[in-house]
Image 1 (cartoon, one colour):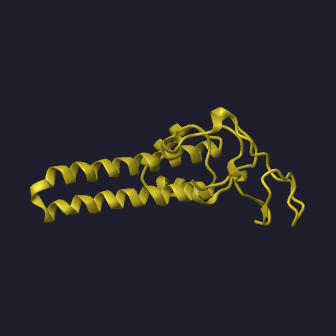
Image 2 (tube, rainbow, N blue to C red):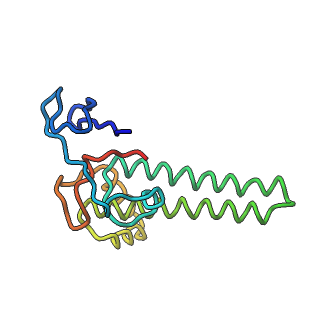
Image 3 (cartoon, rainbow, N blue to C red):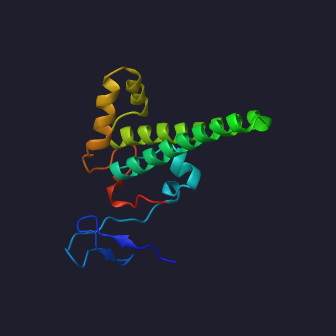
Length: 160
């Protein structure tokens, strides 16, 4: 089964082996990934290597928020069913921890996309500056070039 590619300029679907878009003539990015760049599903969610564009960052943040919210709802179940309160609490905590790992991974990869070290995530511990940093991560685009953290992710698909 071949994957469908889309033009990053006009959004038209193109054949997987095309080099140029038939609609707008835009040169399509090369999408042949090396073995090192192919990641499994866990690495896609929680990996700290590589880069992520704004759309991928937003998608990961929505997934992380949903997991934390779902974990919190699981924790509320033990109020209703006290016989399994401990198990519900552990399950809710585990789901929230996975959501938190996805969130931290997304931020580290977004810093990589901006050409910064993942340790810049520590800036989020500073009150008021954390709001500015998150706004920059959500709104600012990258420079469009490869950096020490990998190729520009703008030409790659965002979904699973």
